[in-house]
Image (tube, rainbow, N blue to C red; front, side, top):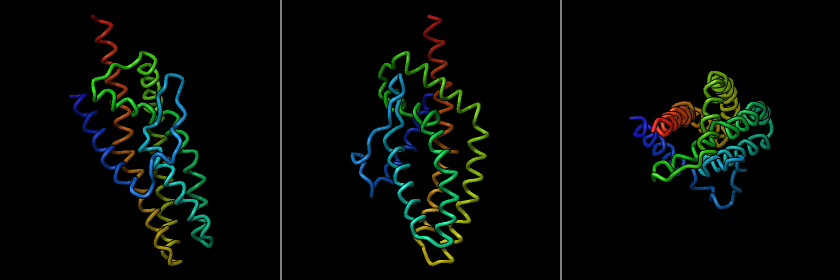
Length: 191
């Protein structure tokens, strides 16, 4: 059951992320720096984060009330993405090898468990940051609509959906993955 849930979450994530890459080719983005065990943020997530940053920069550059509201979003988003890419997303890089039934290195498993546990401890904080971010994004969308900047309003709506995707799919997948790896470790130790 746990493995099925992980595979379902991975499929949802990869399907949704693949659709977002139509304007941004992954080869144009450097891979995430690996952790000491080699875990990396999946490329689809990294590309999406980069694309969202570019859109945010364009909203800031547009000036006016939209630019001011976009700056407020940037102050929240940068720190939040750093935290996600430090511990919430790298374990998801193990989903593909697990789905292919490839063996994982002990160091990768240990680090993924550590990161998932870190996310579990900070889960409510991450969700709270999403609430603050969503409020700032609603203000950005409102300002962009008032100033006739529909692309920036659409960006704000897309970033709200991105946050919901993280809450409903990616964060739970990391947490479930951590628990699955713990169960796998325990089963190997009991043999």
